[in-house]
Length: 419
Figure 1 (cartoon, helix red, strand yellow):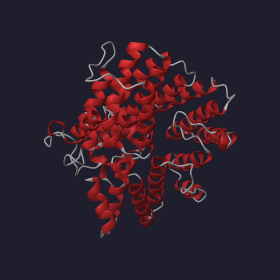
Figure 2 (cartoon, one colour; figure 1 turned 90 degrees about the vertical axis):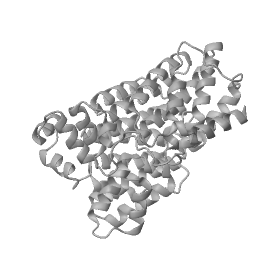
Figure 3 (spheres, rainbow, N blue to C red; figure 1 turned 180 degrees about the vertical axis):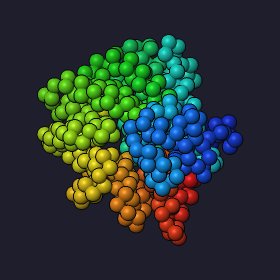
């Protein structure tokens, strides 16, 4: 079985038929503002008309289209809704590689799609599926890959686990098998959203809804709601996402540390949704509730069975993220002074995300040296995640634009991102 999985992994990463250099995807020289302008013109909208539909100012649209101002995630989502397109199209995702190695993570997506397509038909495997104990151990490894933002290796190993667990649930209908399948599906959904495959993320939401119903775990339906809400946030439906999260959080009985972790994580997501919706007071209220929940869980009682990383450190960096989403760079920089990323509360994934947030904050504060340093730190911590992240690419583009003479570290970073 090990040899079969290794062969499959290597084949998916490097097989010629999984990589097509002639694939039509966004022009690498095109920035987000130019894609916004194209989407606007295809719908016969003026800048004033688009601004009215997206509920932003015309001057902001003009600055973003010209490339003089970066497009925030909330602006991209709002414009995508106004133009009736996927936000991934505005971002230029997926960011395909220029060779088999740099494109390896995308080569895994077809196999993940296929593994998720089995609903009423049992996958035909070359061998019997691994036991639930073995598959549970494999999922622990995959969760570690997710936390380290090792997208390509995660994507290569995930299809086999999805298929084997699908066989297990169809043959046994065991709640544990459904729980493990739900966990594997959630990993697929997270990877799909990060790479810009929102259609696949939607499929995952529906699959996790079904698996949660059979898993006999009272927390999974709430986590499915959180996953659905995060996808809605990506698509710009912040108010609906916020309502869903609040309803889920209100149903949780915080009688044990695990339920408190779930409760706090929901409120962290609510804080980001409220911030993107421009609801400042609501955003900070949800963040405060989450921070209090994190403080109630003693270190010795932390279990984190769902990989939520609900702890005081994670709550603190979410505070910076809330400030960034609200466009308050000064507040984000002040809050960042109290963050120690060397602590055990943080995974590489969370560290890198925070570095990218702070790079945006320093960019807005016109401290370009600090912005570049934070971007380089983000890439050093989680290179695959940083290179595939729309906000990171926007920040790098803007840093390139503001420099009359581009520093070599920035030029090298731009080259590695292939932008």
